[in-house]
Image (cartoon, rainbow, N blue to C red):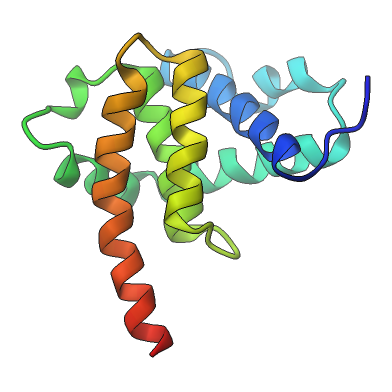
Length: 146
């Protein structure tokens, strides 16, 4: 199997993080136990996935608050767990990642993951919520750069 590179390895890492965080949200074992299922992956894939998992967990309260404020007319409990986790990973990357991922890239990556793992309309919902979050964050960054 070829070594993943560039955004390819990061997307694969996002998919692993999604699966681990989804498992945790469903009440399954610790992330270490679930993460062991991916021990065959390249170290760079594992490292980025682990950073995402730990980052989403560390900022969970703020991420949930932000998602709740932008998911208009939706109670977070009614949003599919997989969609909520996909959006949480993207918000972490946009707002808390070091360095932060540009909102357009984070949204696009989340939409692609949602197409693969979410329901039929998930990618549209994920896109709408994350664009609302990214637009607000992007404007703040532009002001800071000026």
